[in-house]
Image 1 (cartoon, rainbow, N blue to C red):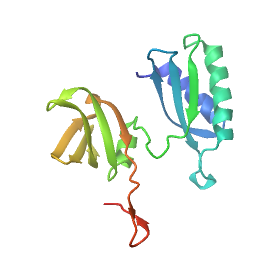
Image 2: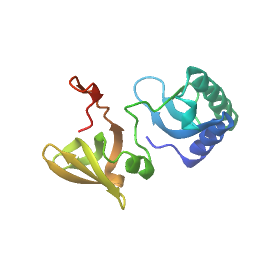
Image 3: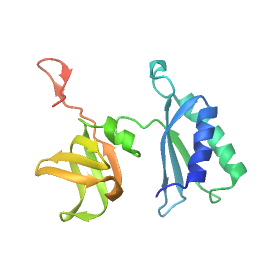
Image 4: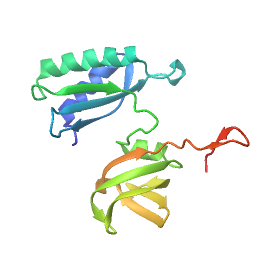
Length: 166
């Protein structure tokens, strides 16, 4: 579920107040309590990865800001973490950065008889993702995409001792 602009603005401000960078957020509602999942990164990549302390600091800032603004229902769960290797893609910029990587893409409505596509991102231009899967190249419009994640490649080439980047 998409977050409203006021909620995103509050989160962005709270994350920046924690000296971190806002990557994205998602609202997950299901059978249990609703979850607000916020992804953060270091403002400077040379500082290393996001630590538990970073997540805790951002969580305190976001939680306090959300409580003051009253934009979310009572009883929600706040999760703060790094986007990780299997990072979700939220913005057109995320899709552009992901070109060359393997993705798992879920559509809001079926296209060509299916809602999920897996393959290598060939390009992202003019609001369309070109994805090379086992059965060909597919053009998926940003507006059609419900969610997308990078699929990490953990294959290891034993002969050369390097990660395979086919």
